[in-house]
Image (cartoon, rainbow, N blue to C red; front, side):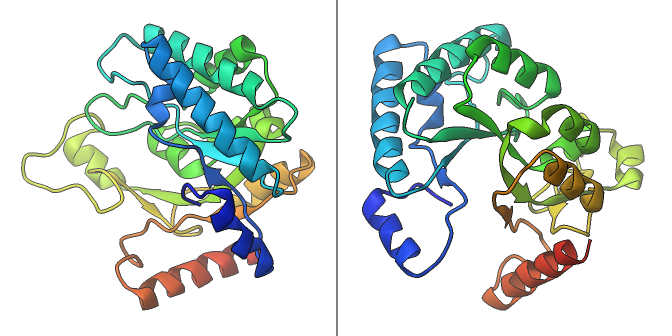
Length: 255
């Protein structure tokens, strides 16, 4: 769910609905800013919002760990993110809230987002040492990066705080034609995708949902599984998006 203030969330609960996550206050990159004052201001504002919303019963606050400067050395950006998110985790201690980080790598050509891979998450959790930092599990990003989502959950299921049900279709013929690194000079990227992959609803891509859901259950996950609709075959009209959400729900219910 997008960024919402406490007064905007109250009617959602009043309607009997459940809130899986609420976006962390943006811009997310400010939490990892090289400017100490800017970073402190961002952490203060985010913590105030989190505490006000967590008081209503919302636990998960969604973010992608973007750096402020995409072209800066990744090691420096990583250190700034560790510093910023450690401070934010300390600022929300006792609220019952946690930051659920999604491993969407970002856009061409830098793919600058941090905490997207097993190695970076392992190191991030080690250096921040806070249970207030968790994972928003979305296998679609792992698949497009070539990371096995089953093995990922075998290692990190206990750190999952929220789940996005989104899939990715990989197109081998496109990989043969264009490879995986360079953009094509003649072919446009897929909507909600790249030149050899596209996001899609559960069941239309390569994610082994039965195994993934079983691993989450074994780890004790009892949170929301939220269908994130980014699929060129369904997005674009109310009727199409309803069909996509229903088809995704029905597929997950049947695995």
